[in-house]
Length: 105
Image (spheres, rainbow, N blue to C red):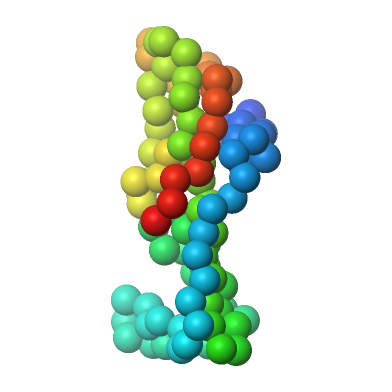
């Protein structure tokens, strides 16, 4: 069963933090297989969601960093991005963040 609370926490954190990112003029990079991204392509680069367009590409932080109350443990995805926090002794209890911010790359 999908838990909508983590999604709400991430959305709230994103709204509180604002999104940070970067843009690059020039060709889009290649993926791990050496295939160059084409205009219209979207990919995840660590904790950044990137988009390719004609003449460049841009990446915005997809997951913010949040501060949680004592007794909460942060949960990370396979890319090492913080996605939420749960109570230390009750993994089914999601913690509400105290504050969130986006860190630059």
